[in-house]
Image (cartoon, rainbow, N blue to C red):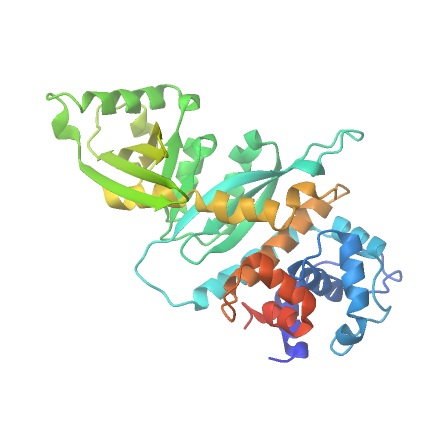
Length: 383
């Protein structure tokens, strides 16, 4: 795929966004600006100064397949455009792109576990103007290792309203949605079922009577009178990084007398996971509780619950450590939200490349050194 075809494929998904600038004052083409920004972020750029520097260094090469009617945009132009661009349109274009690509991948019977969780972009907070930090709620496919979409909200407490909106935009049919206790809400469970997916929702004290009922029920099944309620058990052991973690999962799918649990649409089982971690001579034990629309298959629930942490380890951690997202001081307009989408486009493309065995960090270095490799990364996940 040559340079012009790669850009044309990019345009197919991201070239139809509404131009945010005034007619007659447009010197640089919107689709070319976005293409350069993604290419620069793949190659290690972290802010608009970096992006402009990268583009100027690669001007001769970029001009062989981009029109660049006004030359290379300045860092102020990159800033203004990304801060003015409609993020809802950009997010939908991102979702459409991932959805098409995922549908082309080999399909298997393995259920895709899709964790949904939020992350605050810490430095997007502007105390002087009273602007709160941007909080992005993202969904991730653990089966394919791809970020599926995102929605913005302010503060973690607002995830409750952002999650249903995100779910409505995604094709999650046949998947298992996992959400932490903040998102354990009746309307979210209802939305998941209506989207023809299953859920595993974590419980904590903020669920009040429901949490108390479930915890109390699992305490009772340890007695002879209630032992028959226990449906299945499963043990999973994970070793690595000098630690051994054993996760023991118990499920119950006969709980007709639990009033609070029966108020949740589609609920079929409740689960308890006891996690025992041994590191050196130290041992810690933690118990977690869940409700699910799955039938109580303890092995499936145990492994799906474990996969929820992929979104923390393989998305949020990578955004902070590799892309330095928390250090970004982009605060004006829609800049923080749009740059979050840019980083996720870049991350999806980097993760999809299997041409070299290298870390994501090394791939970004290689893209900065070799424009042909950078363009090859851009060609990933295209038609």
